[in-house]
Amino acid sequence: MASDMSLAELASCLKIEKKLFEELIEILKQEENALTQSHFNKLDDFVSKKTSLLEQLSQLDFKRNQYFKNNGVALEKKAINYWLETHSSNNSEILSLWNQLLALVDTTKNLNHTNGLIISKYLQHNQRTFVALQCASGNISLYGPNGQAYI
Image (cartoon, rainbow, N blue to C red; front, top):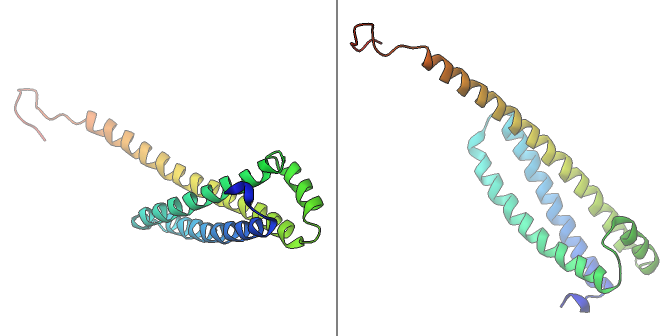
């Protein structure tokens, strides 16, 4: 039960989150590489791996947030930082893990944003190509002036 979690268990939770975010970052880097190299056949595998990691991270996030709520801590970065600084003075590992986790979250956001921009550029290119093909096909007459098939 989340309310019974100790500081040691919080540290363990943060360690697991850190590991999962490191794995997610690696996948996002591989995804970026696949996108820039036009290896689109690999993307389904990345989506599957990311989904699994995000589900695990969501469960840990819930558990961690429950811990902070149960200890009267607002779920804001500033409040959590203050609480950790004042309540984990005997265990600086927790504050260090928290700060590392925040840095990994920022890295993850940046990589995901970059990949999103790359995908958006491909989508725009494909949409322009599709429109060009539609326009070109609209200009091709399939029937001659006498009603006979004409290609």
